[in-house]
Length: 101
View 1 (tube, one colour):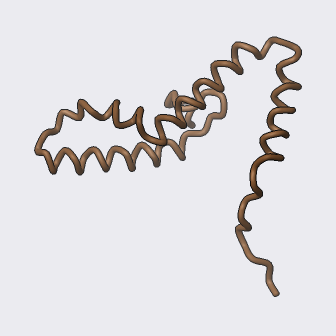
View 2 (cartoon, helix red, strand yellow):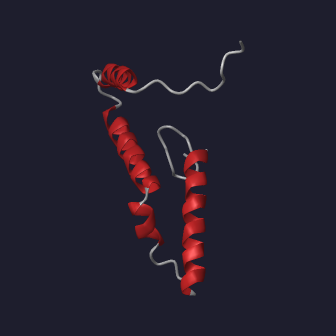
């Protein structure tokens, strides 16, 4: 879904960024009404400085490197190793449901 919108071509994830875009757009619309100025010329800057903008740039960079390195024999094993390392360093997620007593 995200790849169709050009959001995340490697991972194909687009719902999360779409929701974040909505939140950012709502903020820009509120500011436009407060200022009574509706050109939205600052929206791009607002996006680039936001968490969403940083997230999209990281994902774009990851996709760019991955597609450029995909044909190299050492790259897939390196990615698996890197994924395992990041998983080991990341804190475990919270439980979604508490066990029934």
